[in-house]
Length: 148
Image (cartoon, rainbow, N blue to C red; front, side):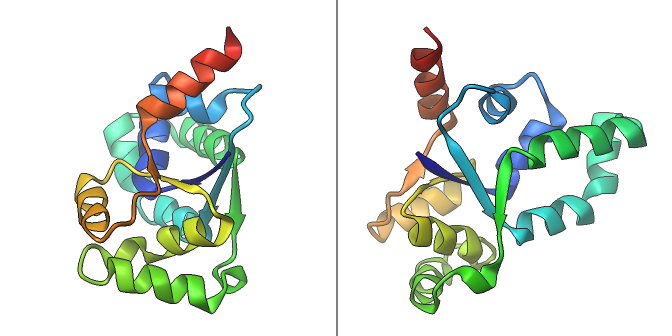
């Protein structure tokens, strides 16, 4: 299964490496394939100081954890997403949350599911008939079933 990882999911995993979210991302025998756009890496770097302050990680710990999490995600250059997928995503997100356009476009392009904790985004896109989200609980349940 192809899963597009939204920024808030990655932040949650970095901030709590024992959470369900981190356990899903770090599961070694998972058949889940995680993707994101380079925007995620940029946002992590832009908010690194804030993450460090919240987490109380040392610089080395934070760098190690960011690497651990991001190594599980395949980063796709925005230029590789077809214009049609991007335009569809833009029309969906323009009055909901334009900052999530890349994640929706990538989800469309790879025919995947979007993993996001953004309730407003989910609500707004669901109203437009776009229901390609997957929840943390759904993913965790899949992992629990696979490891039994």
